[in-house]
Image (cartoon, rainbow, N blue to C red; front, side, top):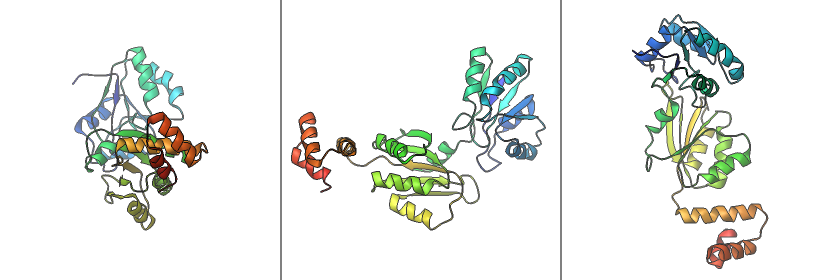
Length: 270
């Protein structure tokens, strides 16, 4: 097996058995493991009798760790990077050090392995292979609404925490009241749950059940005609700027050669 300076190693997202033989081999063979939380990583290492030492590497100390890691590798050592669960750099730390190591010419490789997005989407039937993944959504209602509006004609995939999921879906419902939603939580664990349904039913389901575990969510693309969706976007944009329905109908009919009366009816909700 070819030797590298730096290994990016995915770890199980729930079930400890979901680690590859190569990942175990690498974690045993490297001189040091950089991990988000040594307590989480140590459980995995103990399970597979891996004795390699760990150092912390998380989003709060990424930059200060760079020089020490580079010095460690320059001395001829090898290192592995893991996150608490899943694949590093996919909504997890690692981007800073990988960028710097590539600048310095160190050899880097990534192992195949667990990833929540692929695990979830492989259980959900979609129209085609294309989708937009945005990681964790921002905090404000406006920011979330903007992302949903920008992706009306694309399948939108994101991560969400259990304490925010209901509020997020209610924001989505305001923009797309008839949308279809899929979510997965506790993936690969005993209480794994994957639900595909209309947004009203999904919200009701979550309101009547205990909400645990990090969520992967898919908002299916709008089934409306893409042109109709674009017109609705323009109407909502003008409404947010406090234009009246009459003004909106005049503006859009002039700019896009649309029927003024039809635009007016849409703008007033008829």
